[in-house]
Amino acid sequence: MEFIKVNKQYDKYVALIELNRPKELNALNLQLMGELRDALKDLDNDDDVRAIILSGNEKAFAAGADIKQMADKSAIDMLKIDQFSTWDQIRKTKKPLIAAVSGFALGGGCELAMTCDMIIASETAKFGQPEIKIGVMPGAGGTQRLTKAIGKAKAMELVLTGRFISGEEAVSYGLVNKVVPVEMYMYEALSLAKEIAQMSPIAAQLAKEAVNRSFETHLDEGLTFERKNFYLAFATEDQKEGMAAFVEKRKPEYKGK
Ligand code: CAA
Image (cartoon, rainbow, N blue to C red; front, side, top):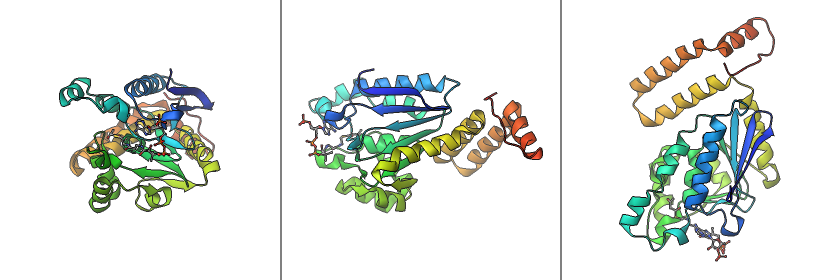
């Protein structure tokens, strides 16, 4: 891996992926996105991983898709390369995915953070969809996920002006879970990941799928999907263990079975 660093054992059951193109502010070129897709697939298949943190560095989570790589492409080139199809695979990650964001999360960087399930931000974080300033528009979910996260009026403002918002503002709009001082954001992301990693990993996967379904379908279908996943959880040993532990007033030990 050239442009990402993967630590499968960042903590017990918690893996960390760091975007690693610091000179280019982690601009998301095709190779980086391919590496990220492959790493997430690998971690998804690893029973020793129950939650994944995705981070950049203090200065940049990611400053967007690689403008230099795209600048001279034609529409046909873009169609053939279809670079955002990689993002669809990232979206299909089954395990809980936490973005730990410091510095710039712009364009594709903001879209990548929104593709994750939760976002922890540092006080220096800057979120935005500045594509309009370079003559294009968001292409990796920005118009859809941002609108669903913060509502039409604010999303329209950010997409049409390209203005950046701070971590504080992002929390107040419901885009981000929590904002903390810069020296704390990785710790905070890890605390959240560790808490989630204590749960049954199968229950977490079923729950994640059901929450995501609420963005993709209408209420009736979503409720049916949720109910089926709830019933499916009763096929696991973890369900027996979780409920037995409650009755016996002890801590559950989940095995992911
Ligand atoms: N693509 C390619 N290179 C980038 C980049 C990007 N998105 N963002 C930054 N870089 C490069 C710069 O070109 C520069 O490289 P050189 O030293 O070789 O010139 C290096 O990273 C450092 O950047 P700056 O000197 O510009 O740093 P700064 O602190 O002055 O400014 C910034 C930081 C405000 C983030 C500025 O770099 C910037 O505006 N970047 C572009 C942001 C953007 O428009 N993102 C959207 C991209 S399109 C997209 O993402 C489409 C989509 O929907 C997926």
